[in-house]
Length: 165
Image (cartoon, rainbow, N blue to C red; front, side, top):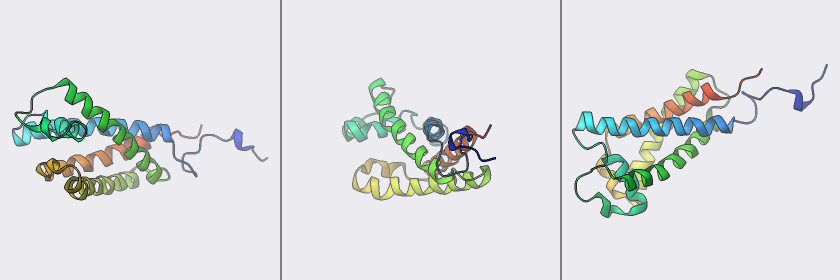
């Protein structure tokens, strides 16, 4: 007996990604990324955890906010999140499209590769052209944080995507 298209369960491994799951995966991975960066800078480099959000906020507020010690500043934190979360959602949606037909292990591998590529693009040509202060953050910590973003986003997407009932 043939089923009408509307009678079919949500399509997990079909033609379209689960965009809602992709957006949430981006939010989850974006928040994890910020926590990894802030903790890493503080614990591994002995610097202020407020440095990474301040560097992101400088994308909109200008490099002048980077002068002086990196202390908590609500305006800078909110500005950073207003930049970082939408970008994380966009990257989460891209990863959803890239991994929507994959099972967990393959999706995690794609997420890892995506995170590394994102680090290389963001911290070299984009930083060099638009945001030179990010050159100061080049290194293993930022590379690992970006790799973890990709892994977490891909894993969260696979875990959140709709499954057939």
